Image (tube, rainbow, N blue to C red; front, side, top):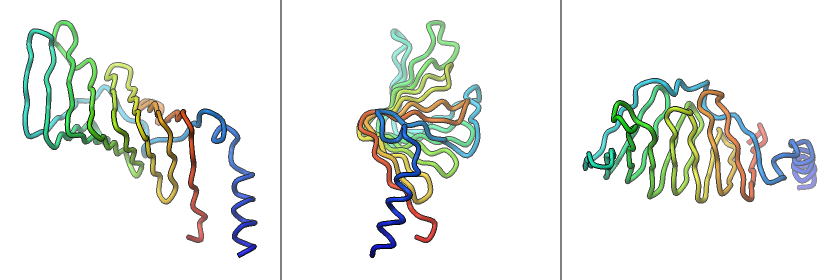
Length: 162
């Protein structure tokens, strides 16, 4: 048992310092995501409100853009002022985001289409292979393929022998 503890302690001491601070930077997704690509939405129901430029998708909502998939029970799509394109997506009720072999879960996700940024909040769990990181908030930059985690970040790293 002592060698495992020693190996774990060595691994913890070798971790980058930001993981133990208020935030952590991690890679996210297999590669950079093209946030300018088309967005495909499927769901059980759709309600359109032309007066405020929104569309509400409910029931088994799945959104795809390139290699990325986002799933949630409820997604509000907000269009630009001239209704020519999607401005942002607001997913709630338990959200799953998958890109490459990385997956993240949270209570809510707000996706700024133009900026290529997804902000996930509420009990965020990011899994990358056998490793996992939890926090209260994660901001994913799809164009850079990175994520910034903040709010009591906790990391579980699996040793290669596991």
